[in-house]
Amino acid sequence: QVQLVQSGAEVKKPGASVKVSCKASGYTFTGFYIHWVRQAPGQGLEWLGRINPNSGDTNFAQKFQGRVTMTRDTSISTAYMELSRLRSDDTAVYYCATLELLPVFDFWGQGTQVTVSS
Amino acid sequence: EIVLTQSPGTLSLSPGERATLSCRASQSVSSRYLNWYQQKPGQAPRLLIYGASNRATGIPDRFSGSGSGTDFTLTINRLEPEDFVVYYCQHYGSSYRTFGQGTKVEIK
Image (tube, rainbow over all chains, first blue to last red; front, side):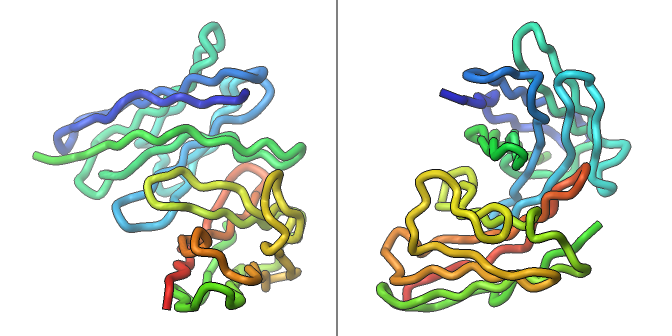
């Protein structure tokens, strides 16, 4: 079965960086984009960007341009999202997901809590 | 980038009633690329409806979607206790995704 398993919770200080991993299994990792979505406490869903695991090409939401990096290691079917210059309002649960429709292929990781606090 | 606005923010209903949730896009979108998600507390979102009106695998038929252009609707017939959670619409863009701000369906 398809699974996306994310790394554990992180606590960071303002100005630091965080790197979250997402290990895929149960399907061909290079066949579908990996997207990253976050959810601040009590708030809605916010799309950060996506990576093509095959080519490494990325697309980011304008809000995060210059602050987010997405990479992948195809040898271990793992995608990474790194967010730099962290602020307190980056405190959120970060999800990786496939979010594809053609064909329908919509799977989510369990989420990673990132807390930014001095 | 298309902005999605959901209404109402909160919908207060009783079990067994019908819920009607709205999602309005800032410009016309293809219905093929408008989706609905359900999110229960402490869980990742789950795809409910894709292409505006197609139920995802395993979704009960009390959930239905409709709409076109800029106006889309999620209808939940005969609300069950487990349906009182949060719903998001989503636009599937060519190289991005956007979500509405969500509608919470709560027990009246």
